[in-house]
Image (cartoon, rainbow, N blue to C red; front, side):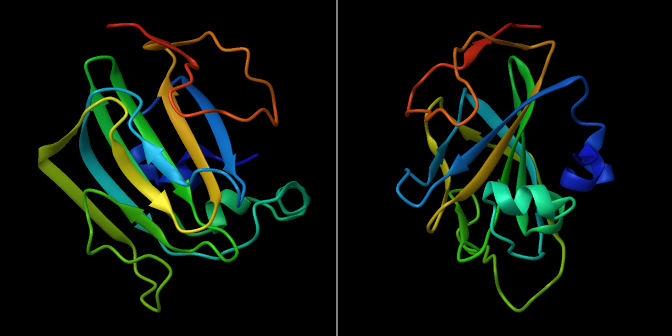
Length: 173
């Protein structure tokens, strides 16, 4: 377990309250592209350089706060349903995270400096539009506001999730 503020930063923790989350492990043979779950607007991103521990279960069980210690790129979005965040966590052999909105952003490099970017004019994404990719595999943590999302999926731990598969439904606030 870990604190939300350790994962996405205390500056961003106010952004989401009463959360649902789903952690999606991307194995090497899975699709490594990340798509927008709804029509939305990118508000900001934060890149936290960090370690690149493997994200398999044996490491998750033995390395405290692994997701908070690994390199990660957090994208904060706003939609007509509320706010949500996509947390892209790097891993061993997978430090390269690419995003559509910042092609010059380079993760897993020798510069170990926090990189925060606000998008005051917003960058719009359509539902199912490509947001980013890992170059191999890793983990995506989707953070959703409980007041705007209802899980209605029969997805169980270790189930594969397919492109376009519904996990629930958004409720307009």
